[in-house]
Length: 429
Ligand SMILES: Cc1ncc(COP(=O)(O)O)c(C=O)c1O
Image (cartoon, rainbow, N blue to C red):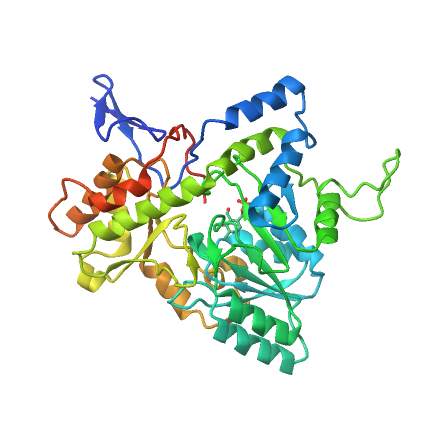
């Protein structure tokens, strides 16, 4: 008899294999990071439908930008993706054909691909172990070299990885010394802080993502912020095909179709209301894992740098296979067999075929983090029961005793009345 296995979209209610009928086994799969809808998103979306504001203009869009501006403290323009925000942000910084742009190597490809969209070339910079983000001393070395050659980069893309800000003070000081602008890729770090300031405010331009796997989502979307209001207005203009004022369709500059829709901005408005709770929930998940693995040798949570608040958008751990007992890939396999999705830490850009031949300052730290790093399920809607299930798969994989409950002191952090309505699969990244 052939039996088909159906992996059901997360979340179902119980951590169990369910026998649907004699031929089909329904298996619930715990995914890495799924949308988590609050109670008001639907009403904002309904308003868009009832008022027929279904395009890339409308009240939700204006309100979402205003509310985001209130949250971050900088003018903001809502776009179709975080990638679009990086693309337009680089153009605002004057990046063009033949330029070079520095970029953190340990990141998702969307950080650096817009460099190529503009006909420029990346030079990658390694991370340090303390933050997993750009190493300021390597940035200094790279800028010194480029200055000596008389070929400074047009910009530096500093990525805030997995919910933690890069160490912006030394990075800003070094860039200021050479007169080089900074674009902060805060796609993964909405809700994080650096020395009391929100991620995104310490750069010339910053980009955020509302992709389905992020801490809050609009299903797909992004936001560009800058203290330069003229730049934000320019970004808005370019994002709407750069149509010149007037009735006729006249264009004097190249534009893009990069504007967010008023419907999706409605989702964003509701999501922004629950952002502080989502930060709390993601942090609680990371700390529960840390507590539950405390007796296991060499499985360490990504460092929490002392200068700010790490949202732990994803709970990332570093494994030393020799003492831990299994390799990162063996652990991913064990989790997969138990229907739990986990992923390696980003493969550094300097190792990508796409960027073969591009220069990288350092690189060994990012390579090591990639080789040993694992991202565990981190959805803010992950229940304690589900997390205990994941934890015990990890513990079983190394022959440790299973736990029958989670540490109680972190429970309070995960509370809240927001409904767990996420139905989406983690996106394909
Ligand atoms: C570091 C980083 N930069 C940029 C992006 C691009 O954002 P989007 O998917 O909204 O285009 C993402 C995520 O998707 C990301 O993780």
